[in-house]
Image (cartoon, rainbow, N blue to C red; front, side):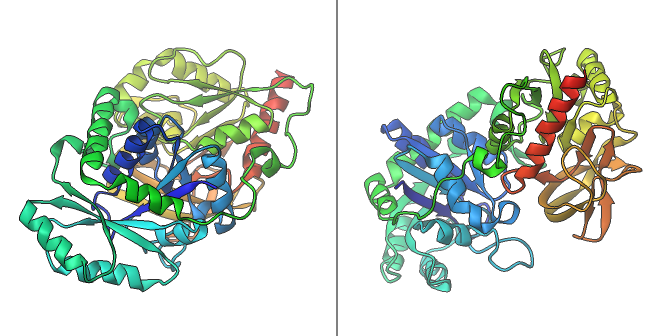
Length: 457
């Protein structure tokens, strides 16, 4: 059994990431093995969680993976740890639009049978905080609200007023944090700036968050609350079992799958690499900002999400790698590109030459595209047969012209019916992020195609 806490809030911007990351770092510094988790599809917060704990940050997304996988995926990530800290998403009861509690922090807390700590931005209230906390505590009797951490408290007098009000709510105060500019993390058009782009500053910020949490929170009480969580039933998720059997047979040559990383491509789920490895591939990371060649023997390419728009000049300047990517794609090798990967494969991004694999041009837009997607494969590809249904998520401020190729990747129903993405030869490129733990067949099919191409090559 792993002790566990869910860190939630009434709304976005209350300080969940600061508190959750600070708790992870503080408990890690105290000698505990801490497992970091994030509710929802967010890629950036888990980077800070990994920095705080030294372990991969993992997502728990009930929409993309299904409610039945939340506890197994949690147990897989938390195996061998003393404590797990789960950072929530948006407000405690906010989930997928129009789908009730699905994918909300509250639903994940219930699936994990985990107590919730509510982080409240108390900067503009005093006695009203009791009404707010009472409402969140009583809204769903199945959600166990174990305590509250008051954030952005101004003065000792302010703290005294808040504590006095909360005595009537019956919810204990487990921490009080003052305003502290040192713990802030800079943001831009899609949220926080990823760790990979500001490593030294991120280390300092996480250390400051840990110090603030140690000074302002009752760590013993929080740990005791986490240890009060009951055992979870069921076995941990296993990538091999999810696949059913290795995609590449024993004794066969393991195909090399190159996975883009570095500061421009920071969005990935740990389970993708685990599934590809279990499927029989050798996964090798490379950095399109620095590496001028693909890894030796590359038989498949995965380019996930990130911020290529921030690094368009540097990516364009690396013409040797752009040429290598284009040649690999033209050879028919499997290429799976999501969002940032789509932009990198385009002819151009904000007027700068990219790989030219796709007959499309990309540019920044004023419009934010955001939300879960129910997707149906329109064309046979290296990830799925036409007609295959998958769930995904879009999150970008760029557009491509055109938005879909002659053979689109997906048909989408939300926010309006449309086709999207590009399928050509071995290339599958789309704005839609998917989580392969919820669709392990995609990882299996991709590894099989890589092995077949490798054998032919």
